[in-house]
Image 1 (tube, rainbow, N blue to C red):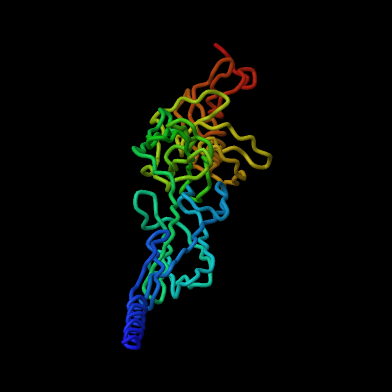
Image 2 (cartoon, helix red, strand yellow):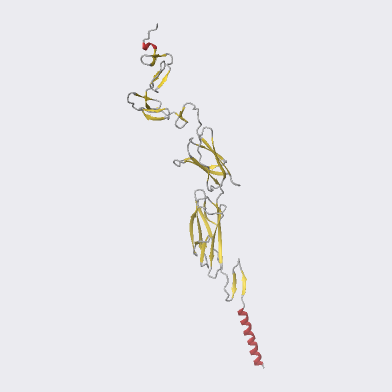
Length: 333
């Protein structure tokens, strides 16, 4: 009887130990990771670490966790270290980042929503467990209500805009379209209107970027093509003269001989040699047929114009020119 009892107790102990070994006990730890006692597969801890660096003209950051405000077209470098327990990693859902760490440099902000984008590095373990890390990049919003206007004589264009909420600084730019030379390049515009010195009847392009206090700027917003007309009858103030080709007042040019000034175009030109019977019009620097004047008007040969003689000059019917009275040896009756 005693022997049977010992055998029975021993059996009970073996059964109990088997029952204990068949059970699974789980202890919850940080996040969704669990530690399991037993043979059942358990979630694996995945902790990627994503960072960003920017080295641009106005924004410099290194290994930042973000968020980072950068300029619209600035390049940026995303980097990450080795990811323990991972079998694969994807950056932004498409870029194969690998599991041993790496970096990638991209540029611009095409496709971002509302001037902002979350870059997400997601890594996966063999058992399907995942972990991710996120870095936000953003750029200033664009200005609104861009417009331009011209002053009365067509020499100054004004460009105005409205800032987005929270901003009060801008970069302003304007170019001559024909050769892309800048006529305005301001990195620190603080108002919402700026003047641009221009040449009338000439095409220009102008645009504005919102900028923050660190210098990061938005995408540029352009005005329509600027072309300010010259006034129909400008009045020039000496020493300026009217260029009748462009209809613009200009400083009169000083020419070095043998060149002479073309008073129509305000350009220094080589003096022309005219074949008889043509004469040189020194105003336009052109060869013309001499005008036939009706007395008492006489020909001013320097400008090929018929003019009245101005005292003390008198008209000489013999030469049909104006000259001093005594030179003609007139006999008065």
